[in-house]
Amino acid sequence: MIRALTSRQLGTDIGVAALLVVVALAYTAQSGYVGFADAGVALGMGVALALRRFSPPLALILAWLVAVLQMLLRQDPGLADLAILPVLYSSAAYGPSVLRWLGFASTFVGAALATLYTVTIPALLTYATPSVIYQGLRAGLNGELATVAESTLIVFTGAVAVFILSWVLGVLTRAFSRSEASRTAQQAAENDRLLAEQAVIVEQERNRIARDMHDIVAHSLAVVIAQADGARYLHASSGIHHDQIANPRDGHNLVDESLSTIASTARGALADFRVLLGELRHNEPSGPQPGLGELDDLARQFGSTGLTVELRTSGVSAPLGSPRELAVYRIVQEALTNALRHADRAKPVVVALDWGREELWVTVTSTNPLAGVGVGADSALATPSTGAAPEPAAGPGHGIPGMIERATLAGGVLAAAPRGTLFVVSAQLPIPAATTGLQPTPSRAVTA
Picture 1 (cartoon, one colour):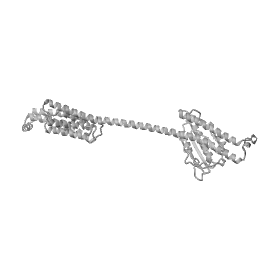
Picture 2 (cartoon, one colour; picture 1 turned 180 degrees about the horizontal axis):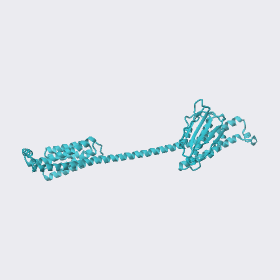
Picture 3 (cartoon, helix red, strand yellow; picture 1 turned 45 degrees about the vertical axis):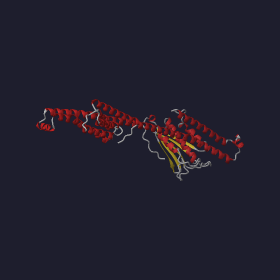
Picture 4 (tube, one colour; picture 1 turned 180 degrees about the vertical axis):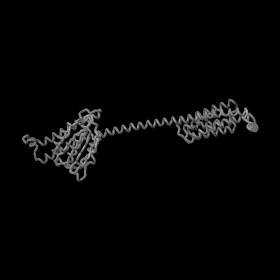
C-alpha cells in the first residue's frame, strides 16, 4: 500500500498535483462561478495525483471515487480529470500484480462510464423522453438512434485507447526498471565472480609460495640441522680436541667437513630464495630451475649427511620438459628429506627412475621404523641413527600433500604410504607425446 519515496520525489508529486488543481480551478473560473463541487472534484483529483507513487492503490481508488462523485453531482468534465491518466500509469508501473490488473479492468469500466455520462445519456435525453426512446427501439432503430450509437462507439473506443495507453506505458516502465535491475544484479554477480576468481588466484599463489617455501627452506634447513647435530655429537663423542682436529696429520677433519656441507647447503638455499623472489617479481623465473641432471648432486648432498642414497635408472630416458623435471626433482628432494628426518640412516634410500615408452615411474624407498606405530613419515617422531634428538611432531606436514600436488600439476599421480618395514613414495608422470610419437595413455593408479 505504501512505497518508500525520497523527499525530492514526494515534493515533486505534491508540486505537480498542486499545479494541476490551480490550473483546473482557473480554467473553470473563466466559464463562470467556481462552485463547491468543482473545487471538491479538483482537490480530490489533485490528492489522487499526489499519491500516485506514494500509494498507487489508494490513488486509483480515490481517483475513480471522485470521478463517480463528479457524475452523481452532474459536474462537467474538466482539466482535473486528466489526473486519472498518470494514476493509471502508476498503478501499472509501481503497484503490485493485483492492482495492475485491476487498473487494466478499470480502463474499460471507466471508459464506459465516461462515454455514457458525456455522450450517450445527453444525446438520448436530447432526442426524446425515455418512453419515446423505448417505442422507437421497438419499432426499429431509426436514424437518430443510429447516430447516438455511432457516437457512443467512437467515444468509448477513444477513451479506452487513451486509458489503455497510459496503462501500457506503466507496464513498459515497470519492465524496463526490472530489466535495469536485472542487468545491475548480473553486473554485480559478474563483479563478485571476478573477485572470487581473483581471490582463488591469490590463494593458489599463496599455496604455491607456501609449497616452494617448504621445498626450499624446510629441506635445506633439515640438512643444516642434521649436519649441525652430527657435528655436535661427533665433536662431543670423539674426544678429539680442537688442536687435534685442526692437525692435518689426522688424515681428515670431520668437523670441518660437516661445517663445509652446512655452508654449501646454506648457499644453495640462498640461491633458491633468489629464484623464488624472481618468480614473485616476474612471470618467468630469474634463474635456472633444478631438473634431472641435478639429482646426482642432490644424492651427494644428502650422502654427506650420513644418509646413503642409491640412484638407479632403467629404460631409455626421454625429455620431460622443465616443469616435469622440476616436479621430479622436488618430489625426490622431499622424499629424501623425510627419509633424513625419520628413517634409519644406517640403511640406504633407493631412488629409482624407471623410464617407459609413455611414462616415467619415480620410486623412493626408505625404512619405516615406526610402521608398527602407524605414524606417517611426514609427521612422525623419529630418532636418527646419529643419536640426534627426535623432532617433535607438529601435526600433518606439507611434504606429502606438496608432492601429490606437484605430481598432479605435472599430469601424473603420486602415492606415499608405508609398506611393511619400508616407506615407499611412488610417482608416475607422463612423457610428452612429442617425444614418444604416441599419444599418452590415461594415467593408471599408483599403489604405494
